[in-house]
Image 1 (cartoon, rainbow, N blue to C red):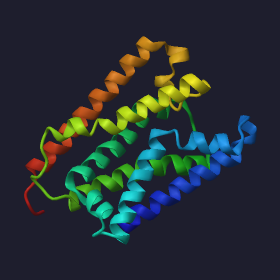
Image 2: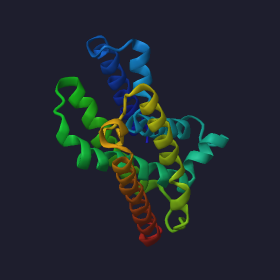
Image 3: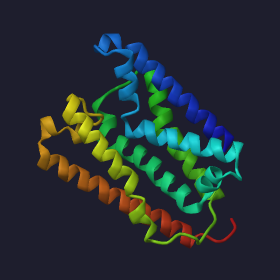
Length: 203
């Protein structure tokens, strides 16, 4: 748990450093770069992973620590971070070729953290405790993010992800893309619940 948290915070810090360093050549102020940093689903979800694990380590019996150790909450976070890796690999990895520090941050945020958190979830989440109805509640976070990302895009003309760029794709195409992502969230959620309900009580 501590290892994943440390890797998570390091990855986030590295990506923030890169964005701030590249702000001038991208025509952005530091404030704009930081705002954009917190506008990515990838960043927010990796932040959720790092923060949730850190709180469980530092204050496991606090109300927040108990909340994040809840099997349904842990599984929701696992679904979110796996979606980060899947969407990046399917829709985004082929459209750019990061180098140096950016490649390191890229691999950590999109590959390493999802894999490490999945392993953590497998070994440290109680078995046979999840219900399929949990999947509907788990959609709240990505839906809230989508509303935020679209509002930001419409007001600033900057979109965190090309597949939600209404200015270029149009509302219809973006709606279809979002529907596919929502279905992916549900399918991955159902898969995680199935795994949880199928595993033996102890490995």
